[in-house]
Length: 369
Image 1 (cartoon, rainbow, N blue to C red):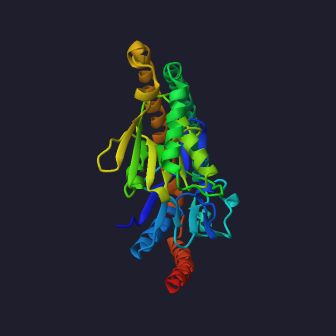
Image 2 (spheres, helix red, strand yellow):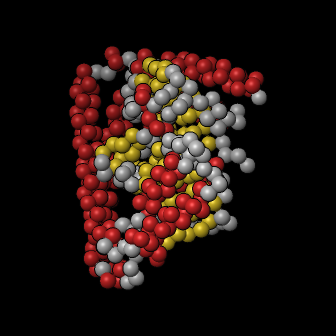
Image 3 (cartoon, rainbow, N blue to C red):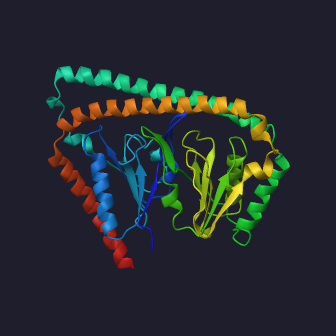
C-alpha cells in the first residue's frame, strides 16, 4: 500500500541554535507559496486543511512539522505537483532554494492591529523579549550538553580501531551501491527526522522507514563512529550518482543520524537513544559499531566516569527541554493576542485563493494521466 504522506522537520532547536534546512528540503520545486504574517493569523490551520484535502484526493503530501508544536505544520510539499506551501516566519533560506516561482500570500491582511490595545502592545513587546531569552537559555543549555557529550565520546574514540571502522564503511559502500552507480553525481536532500521539542525528543523514523525493504539499525556508543560512517556513505552516494536523503541530528546538526536511499529501498540509521529502535520485521538488521570497532572492555574500564557524564548530560537535556516548554507557553500568550485581532473571514478568502491555485494544478495532473 502506497504511503500518502511523509513527515519531517526542516527546522531544529539545536546545540548550535535554531537550524534551518528548508533551502534543501524545498529545492527544485516549480512553485512555492510563502505565507507571511505573525503567529495566530491562521497560517498553520490553513496549511493543515490543505494537506488534509489533498490527501483525501489521493495525492502524496510531505509534511513539515513545527519543533515548537510537533502536532502543527509549518509547511507542506505536494509531491506530484512539485509545489510547496510554507510559513514565512520559519522558512529561512527558502528564497534561495531554486524554486521556479515564489509567491507571497499575505496573511497579515487578516490582522487588525487597531484591536490590540496600547497596553497590550507593551505586553507583547515584553513577551517577545522573554521568548527570545527562553530560546537563548535553551540553546545555551543544549550547547553545554553537547560539550558534556564530547567528554562521553572521548572514551570510545580513544579506544576505536579506525581501520576496522574504515573497512565497515568500504564494505557497505560496495554492498549497497554496486550495480546502481551513475556517471552523473547527485546532490543530497537534507532534512531532520526528529527535533528537540518542549515534550522532549520527537522523531518520525518509524513512519519514514515503514515501506522500505531494508533497514540497518546502527548500534554503538557516543563516539563509536556512527555519524562518521553515515557521512562516508552519503559522500560516496553523491559521487556515485545515487539518490540519498540525508538526515541530520536534531541535537547537533553537524552530525548525521540517518540516510534513506529511495531507489534502493534502504535506510541506515543511528538507532540509539533518544531514537532507539530494534529490528522487528524481515529486512531489518543490526550493525553494532561498539562490538566491531571498539576495544573490548571499554564500557567496564570507564563505567564510573561514564555514569557521571551520562547523569550530567541527562540533567542538561532535561533543563534545555524545560526552557523550550517555557518558550512554547510564552509563544502561546503572544499568539492569543493575534488570534483575537484576526479577521478569519479574510483568512478564509486566502485559503480559497490557495485552493483555487492548487485545483488548477491538480486538474492538469489528472488530465496528463
